[in-house]
Length: 85
Length: 141
Image (cartoon, rainbow over all chains, first blue to last red):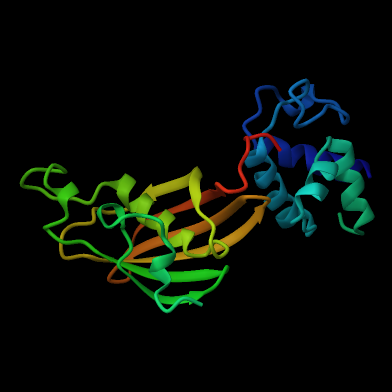
């Protein structure tokens, strides 16, 4: 699980233009809420395509995306629940 | 499917940059053509005596080709242009072959890899995100 978390962190760092470094973000920082990183829907698409490429997990449903892309931890848990990583 | 795939595009004649569809696999991949002629009005000023198809209009042509892969009845706007590269000028007489492939999507967003070539030589490429407007209410997830 720790390894997955690190790879998700790496994915965020390389795929998104974050205002802060990924080290400044906790595993539970909200990614999309304005109180967190405030990412938008285009960032979500970027993440979804990145997760598919890096981990082989497919997210096509918007409701699933909203649930899975809550934080680094929820992304890592989803990858693990899919038997990937 | 419609007999003329181009009738799916909402653009008027003065802003249509795809002339013909060679092949289409709905929702997946399309190959389309744009013939660049000296009569194209935007070439009068770009540039006087040295007509070159503007790179932004090549991107528009690529986006319109990608738009042919959207679901039936949808209209969309450009949401993102990534990794756009222009490798050589496109001039009157060139027939631009545009190949668009859908990479994936989420909700109203669809991402495409698009390449443009003339006589087998790459002239431009980009990744383009189109947002279906009927579904877009805000840019929040």
